[in-house]
Length: 385
Ligand SMILES: Cc1ncc(COP(=O)(O)O)c(C=O)c1O
Image (cartoon, rainbow, N blue to C red; front, side):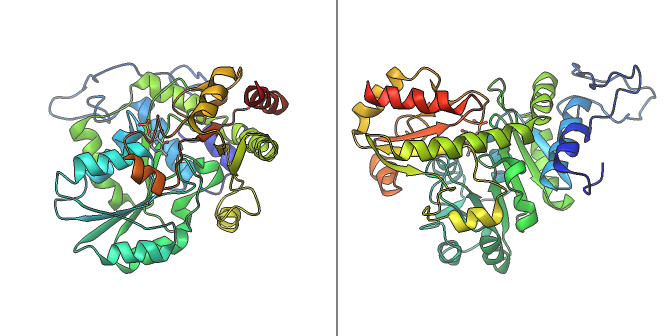
């Protein structure tokens, strides 16, 4: 499938040719741990499913095509995908990460990789200058890690500008593209070297699998990541790879509806009593609006809001909503809400969390694809009750 084909065509056809043995339009799930070899001392295309499996490889081909990369390695979770990238570094190597990171990534860097000898710095804010300053403080800068939009405050980073700063230092840039999905943003086209996904989220889209992926622009940047996939084996099962592929086929239509709903929801939320501030990159007065408009197709399905009543107000909302499930995660067709302070960002010390702008009354909404008026009405009645 050529990169000249449209996004939706690639999502449906890349790696998905009908099965040659029976013509089934949907390729079968290769539920096997091993592969019978036909000749002594000669391996066929597959030997053992930790190393490669046709169902997983088909998914990897599709995800690489969607991000505009040359190759992809699928993992058992987003964190396993991130881990595989960090494992390509050596003790003494330096990493600069964004300041408003997914809590699990922060925890991995702070509690695992610092112990293993990585030098970790955080950019003071989302500007390219802040990344340059953090890079300058490292003896051996090797990797820049960023999210845009960020979790949970939806701040934007100019990916192209950070890539220029990182390149000047000879660093690779990895972008966690989970919040945007490749339908809305393709970091490799903006100069990034690696893209990481928690495929648990928009790519899967149905809250039924946990998975991750790394996609590389150049084959040589995938070599060590692929080695990690094979050596450590944090792979998705063939069934999960197949489910993920099924979800990916509708990514474009789902994302359009997520964006429509989030725009209307964010606007309505702004006018509700008890809501102090709404964070949505689609607002013209959002600090990252211009960057988002430049590097994203639309503004995404995530919205965050600070409630004036703090934790008691969050409790009231959580206990009274009907259509928003209260839970971790995002990006499914069903709406979810979470409380970053006690959930995704609970591993951040409180002062650190507050310094990053993640208040006790902050709520994060993953706006699903239900009828938007029902979602707006649901939150309005829950805030009033
Ligand atoms: C932005 C982001 N990156 C990475 C992850 C980790 O992915 P997983 O839960 O699939 O390991 C998450 C999970 O919420 C996330 O939101």
